Image (cartoon, rainbow, N blue to C red; front, side, top):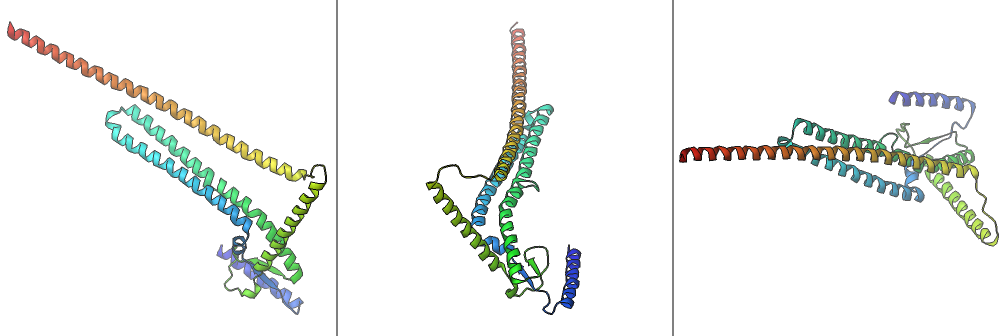
Length: 275
């Protein structure tokens, strides 16, 4: 990564020298701080707070699954002396299945392709688009040759505040938001006085429908896998309980038979003594 950054900076320096040689003013460079911009966009903060609430809920669910598995392991450790090898293996298999389910759930939520990454990307993408458009406009109007993102991989060993255009970007985004809000209010006011349906962008609606269908299909698959695993666990649990009950009944029968045999032996001895 460091080598890549150094090569990028070296190439930039060479390119800058070339520009200096061709222009008396030299390159005009600015930078933005994407993290600072995101922290000051209200829509992003609200959506991010909702996402963090979901994350906490997912963490609680994972912890509950982990606690249940640990309890099952403790119970098995205590009951091992009463169980046959076959029953012990079945219990261990059940615990293994639950652990796999927990890891799969954790991966679905927090993995590289999990819900957290997907939803965070969806959350950041509209802001990134706004920032990109604002940077394009500012760079064109202010005649910047380069604009960097301070929070990206490029290492900025020093950056003077006068080259920071983050606030310009924020103001540009705010203007666009207000302009959009005014346009929406005007459209709604006009709609109240006019009849007919509001024109809908088919492409936008198609993307929304595709995204909704994708989420629904993913949820359906998750529910199907979960239901199948629950059914499998219930069947194993039922089989285990039946075997355990049979084992206990056999032990009780053997115990009673032994007691009856001992009682019969005692009666025989008493009869022999009396005779």
